[in-house]
Image (cartoon, rainbow over all chains, first blue to last red):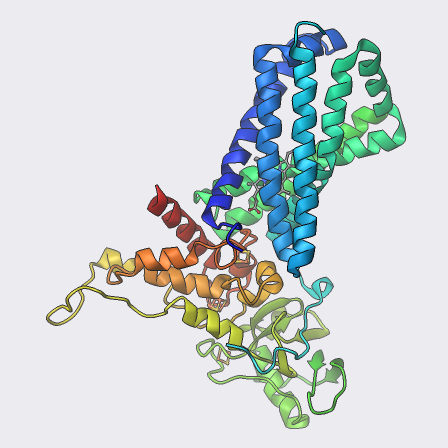
Length: 114
Length: 128
Length: 231
Ligand code: HEM
Ligand code: SF4
Ligand code: SF4
Ligand code: FES
């Protein structure tokens, strides 16, 4: 199975992990510094330019990271090729749906009409 | 080369293996990764609702106070803590920091205990 | 001393079972292997491998109270009773504590465990500086006992495709050798999800190596060499 690359996947795992770490730290700093969280403040934060970038990047990095992670787990515990392909397609579908869902959410709230 | 003994029995009962602490940290990393993966769709929906309206935002807050959602949140907090700490440990060991055995054992203990302490602290806050 | 040993006889058609033995320690008994040899005097159907009885030949690797080790290097005083002995986990069992190492050695051969030299042969010999020689310390001492690979979860799940810690330690032994010119092809061979990248840095290998070697460190070096080679 040529699609399962060696070093490439390993590097994607590390790069996405570092990105996630950075984004989580940034997001936590933004949330914790400042007044208590209510809907108004959360909405303003999440739809501000940097807030939106953090959220979108977070889910993008996460889907890459989760993909490689899930693939590694499947390679270890699921021996048959057919079962592997079905589990992996389910994971891919879920990750894809999550990214689309987040993109739609952000698009809806970023547009000036809402 | 095919072995003539490939159909022989194997002795592999993981409950009879004495796993070193690094292996425990590692399986925790895997379990927490899977938990977070399951939490991901929930997180996407929570994000959507939290932005929808004041009322939806407050209803999420109230949901956290119910036992089942609270427990789920607690599991995710442990998972996030363990996964991120174990992840940082791995990233450092990948570039040769803390990879000698004695240091790796210490950091494995540190990761496991810190994640549990974070989860307990979250549980106490939730109960209070 | 109470010992519980995994017994399997392929000719009997019966499933593997555990057999309990009780044996008085003799004054000269120091290591687990001493007791096993005396048990064999009592019950000559008991099978295990051994040769050097001093941690050199690598033939008596087994699972001792849940951890892999060499019977000849395991002190009796450190063992909790009953001592439970299993063959190396995940390896096909030939008989009792004797396992089939075919696959293990196939991985060893696959990493080309010999110097590759495409250059013109030197007049007399390849010289190494003391520093170059030092880089092989902690690598060349491996006795291929398989304690590490048989304690590696990644090797349990993919024994046919993952090279495993022992083979990867050997692979790095030749990558690190200043006289070897095959580094590029060696790294290209290892750059594979299965051969190298099944390792999750669990470090079970390093935990049990009876020679105190660190396959996980060798694997870490190979991965960094691969990063360097591709950038
Ligand atoms: C909520 C977010 C995250 C999810 C869903 C997630 C998921 C996963 C999964 C499923 C694995 C595979 C585990 C395995 O192979 O045993 C994994 C591995 C990994 N994760 Fe995460 N992860 C997340 C966040 C992070 C963060 C923030 C970091 C940064 C420190 C990180 C670092 C790592 C590393 C380094 C690995 C590879 C470990 C290995 O090779 O065994 N992860 N992750
Ligand atoms: S690295 Fe250690 S445990 Fe592994 S085969 Fe060599 S001597 Fe045995
Ligand atoms: S460090 Fe790698 S090779 Fe060693 S036991 Fe762990 S997974 Fe196996
Ligand atoms: S008998 Fe040779 S290593 Fe134990």
